[in-house]
Length: 178
Image 1 (cartoon, rainbow, N blue to C red):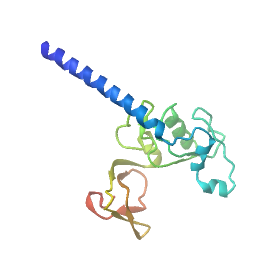
Image 2: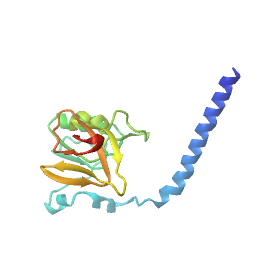
Image 3: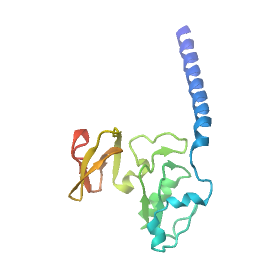
Image 4: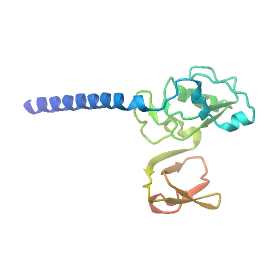
């Protein structure tokens, strides 16, 4: 009984300490992030959309997508408002969904979605990432793409295809052939 009480007190103190550290870190880091609070953030949209003079609508995750042929969802890192099911239904009904790196990575609560990303979009994109490996500053990870050799210098991913086809593969280390 005493041991259980001590364990509960330690667990509570640990979680309280983690919450306080997270709060202080947030107050120290967030003000220094460059997060656009206005339309300036739209500069990240692919320039080709503007160069080709393609009309676009900027919509909410709560809007109806059925009147569109294509939905661009770049940087859909956090999944909320049932957007995963809406985009999957949209694609299953003939629409095209364009996602980018790290889409479907965390839930609305900010927790990593277990089982690899793109989390709920695995069936939609036909693959999933088991692991992301940082590449040290003085190292490279050679890979081939479309018959040509390249070097990854930031990260490499261990990807499992489930209905998709790889266009390239790593040539060394434990990611060889992936």
